[in-house]
Length: 210
Image 1: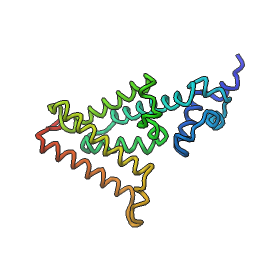
Image 2 (image 1 turned 180 degrees about the vertical axis):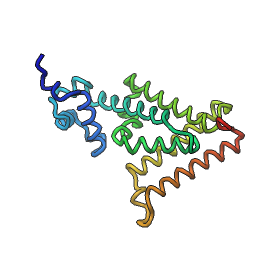
Image 3 (image 1 turned 180 degrees about the horizontal axis):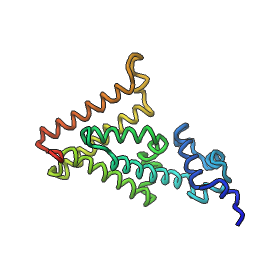
């Protein structure tokens, strides 16, 4: 069979999704249009509609992929040389900085699709469960459900806030010119991790392996 024009481009769905992610990373989610996605991907104007239906479908697919990658990042954390809390912060920030387009969609309730697209909802749940496992490593399994949830939200809030300030906020512009940005970011991660560990100890919670 002679390959059609889409076949010659390879995976059209992937081309469309990558183009959408690139647009969001450079210009923000509001700038996304089906026509511009098609143009950037080098495919027909109908291709994005064929694979995703509409903008909401593209956003949901980006969320699904992003949450799956975040869950994978949590699962692959190496705890051998650092505390679980610190490793979790590093994993979250590393994900955000390496997947800016995904990050700008995944946590926006108005576009992320977790309430309208089942696949996005399932991967978001998986990522949150991986976060809870990270918390268990940090404070142990003896903590009750309320404490587990409190620590999970606190870790998530701190990591997400730092990532947002770095990617879309004023943080890097606010640092004095003589400061090394990466050293300062690491110092913040170290402080946040120490605060988490100190609070766990004060509550009598014992991390796994101790």
